[in-house]
Length: 402
Image (tube, rainbow, N blue to C red; front, side, top):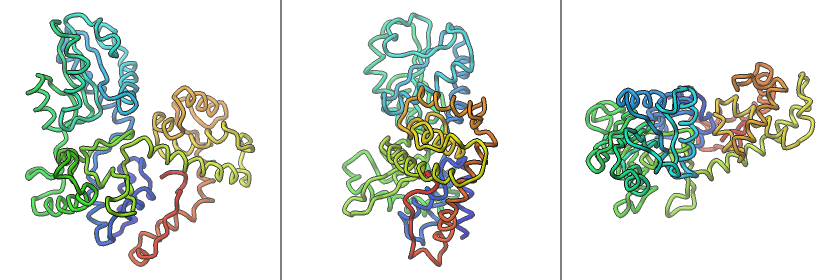
């Protein structure tokens, strides 16, 4: 198998949200004989970027409005603040502003104003993913049910993606209908993404074996080798990965009973972003130093390692790799206003265009910097060959992206 080509294809599929190094680092969790199977699993992951989240929300919000043409629709983020809640609120706000509908038709809601909602309204409980429906039900019963009791208000759920178990559970327990994209479990007998049953079972056994290694006490816990309550999901988001998804994709701690850390490719927790930010900061110093030695216009801003210049080159690098503004802010450990201030400076310097993307000049500068880091790329391609699999050196940083 041509691993280089397979890895490049996967990176392209995910819009370069993961790099060649990310994939290679994850593959090192497995024996070389298992790489083809692992890449097969990775290839079937459904990844929702920031843009695709917006697209899905816009589509299903319109579906909710169409289903309730004479009622005011409120979008109420149901995730926990600090986890997915604030992220989904951010996306919902963007979509609502884009649709530019009257507030009497559509608006964003928070818990403080929930009691002010009058009759003939629809409240859509928003979450990024619903695998079992339990989180949405818990949020509804804890924060919403008692406040709207007695009012003529329809409650529904809105998720970027959900699973059949969640839809059935929410309707049975709460009478809630869910709007979103239905995702099947990975290892269903009919219609599995891994093809016919014989092949599907081979992949399932592989994922179970590795998942059991990560979750040895699974018989007594909700987290099973194939995800939370055996959800068998293959769904990942730019900002997080649900625990319903196969643990081999998101687990990022020491393997129980060993001193070896499992390297995730789609991490769940914010501390992973902090670590990525630390590695990014290490790389930015190198990039600014490298810029002193190249002969290009418009690099005077890089002459001094100031906070502004470090953040600016970091944003250029992240945008080059198609990261969203929300992701960049998380990795840099800054709020959205700080990010907007740096982006504004980037626009003034001709590095960022009005649409928020990189100008040709910024792209040329970053690609020139990458040439000086090209040895790492050659090492990656060399290291994933069969001839060198037993003598692999994994660099701690690869173009500042990890």
